[in-house]
Length: 225
Image (cartoon, rainbow, N blue to C red; front, side, top):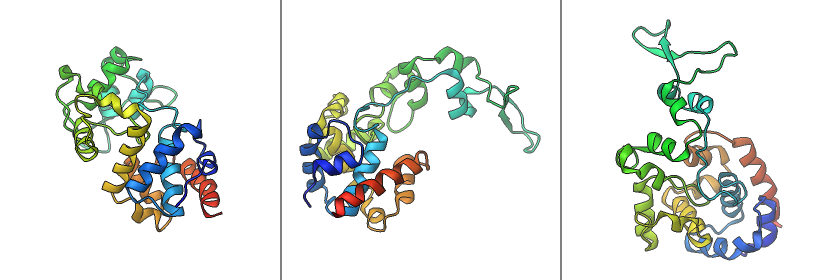
């Protein structure tokens, strides 16, 4: 399938001329080769990367945001009256989770936040290892974690463990996303136009689903033209 500038523009990808060749090559390599697959790939990666302008994860969180996103770790706790022996996040007068001392200490410190949140997960070492930050989300899919970087690097023949910043280069930013697509068989969702099911695999939830669906609808019309 011939992927065009118009398709990238429909998916709200900024500077589409910069990304056209990497996208064409990655889609050919990983069998993203029908209107539905191309439209879904462009829509999802555009959403994940803010139109291919944000190639690394933004972890510049406030203490309030951390308390909302990770309440068990970053919010003040109180006994939960509905669950014996359990706790819940304590709310302020506006109904928002109250940040704890840990959250306040990490306020607007992206590297420290990454090391706290991603340590001892996804193949990363301890907080002290710094691997949470080193292997934060990168590429147009925001591929995250040392294990994912190793598996992807092994598949593409690139050492992303030692040099994860290579995922910021256009070729690898897109190829890593296409590798993730193929590895997780996202084409099975695209073939059914199941953007919701695909989003759960990509995001772990349904965050941004409406925008993803809007981007897909705009892009599929151009892909089928």
